Image (cartoon, rainbow, N blue to C red; front, top):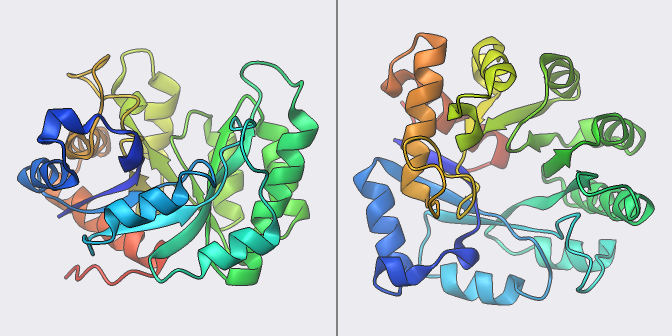
Length: 261
């Protein structure tokens, strides 16, 4: 049993799956993927995401505004908390910092990040953190805002062991996407090998970042199996062993009963 701990179901091209989410879930189940977390990136599209996923109890949700989404409604603690009380919302985010295209919006991103941490602390729900080219500020804000009290996950991890180690000290999990399967991802692969089993997750971040052997194609949750198989080989484990560990971790972090034995 596998879990895709981070995907964006509302951004998939459903024409590939019979124009419905049921086709996506059937494809996932065919690869042993039984649970998914569909992660929000803005407030405007969240109601539609909630509606489209309502019939499917295997799908959990988050609520938040991606640091690069600056064209829509700004998050407030009040609104995030109100939306976060939905029974299917298990996390706040994705939030964080992304300086890849420069630091012009750094202050705005940092303010929004702090708002998300405050909402997560009020709700007692974990954070889903996106960080790119912003290592020092990401760790500083997590520390300053008391994020260790609720924990969370650094998703789609692309940093080094030093950052992973500090995140672990703050009580966070680390999730690996299809990037870990790329030939030039030696540093990330090294982190995946060293990760404590109890803090490890796998994801697709679909429809982005399709893993080898599908690199460059639109990604979807079924392909988290390729990520899991690759990480298992790195760690000298069987797919079954890694699947059991990552599924249990998912349940523990997000407070979901996953039925792992």
